[in-house]
Length: 200
Image (tube, rainbow, N blue to C red):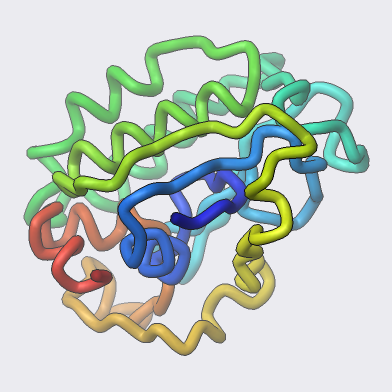
């Protein structure tokens, strides 16, 4: 079992850590922290890494518990994220296989960030055909708390991960290999079965 924070389509190093366990418990009471993957993911583009961020009500300079953080909809971030994903991955071998269910995921307008992140975790698990159990811990005094795993990777250091999984990316030839990109990058390039085998 691993007890950890929710990430927005986390990096490969994050999923590598999750894949070592058959039971994943997400901390819904963790304080929101800016410059983290709690509302940000990194995709590969011809110009290099692109950070896609979910805007939140009240801005990023707050320490509100994750299960109280609301998503801001005053900008069309969902369509912007989908467009960025589509433009940059439309030539990836497995993109067409996943795009419809991904669009369906983004079609829901979640009030709370936690709820959307849990939905992305279930979607990712389904695409990977992973067997791990997903649970959310709502109790601040949970017995899990003392054993919490904190991913050391942040948006400003994600490429320093020691888990350098190599595979053919869309923009290898133009911008070079982007190590430790979000799980979507590998999923579109290799398909769920191969990604799970790689990170397990």
